[in-house]
Length: 170
Image (tube, rainbow, N blue to C red; front, side, top):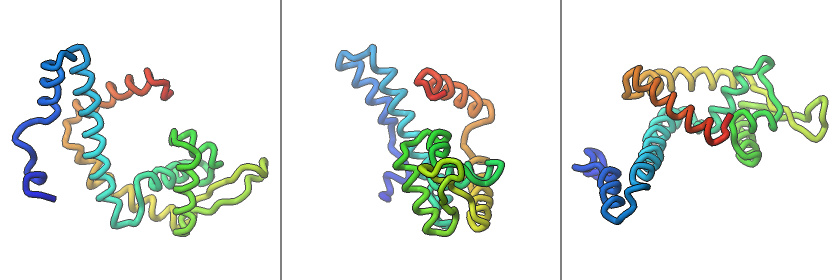
């Protein structure tokens, strides 16, 4: 990382882009462009923090989400289709995550007892232990230190919930 990247820019590039949008005659879209671009950049920042916290444990956030979904399930297992639905990801993404978790001995995959075309994914004791360790790390290093006040956190969640609802997320 360059010294400039570590200390940050001397100006907000998104604010500058917004001004350039207005100057170019796209004022009606300028605030939307700034909002979307800010959201995308915030995603990059937060994902980098999460991935850095999880890297020493050898798990990505996508795989951590699968582990935690199974950890919170009543039986410690779920059909792959349900995992994809709950995580709102493509079936291929679920298959890739489960493949990696299975290779690491963190989950097992078996034919669903009620539907031989479906697979059931179950958390192993090692997977449960890693999920708990990863959660402790994320709570300490990321979730308890979001850089926003409690009020700002709640406002952000409210705004993003409205965005997700309007997109048909739930």
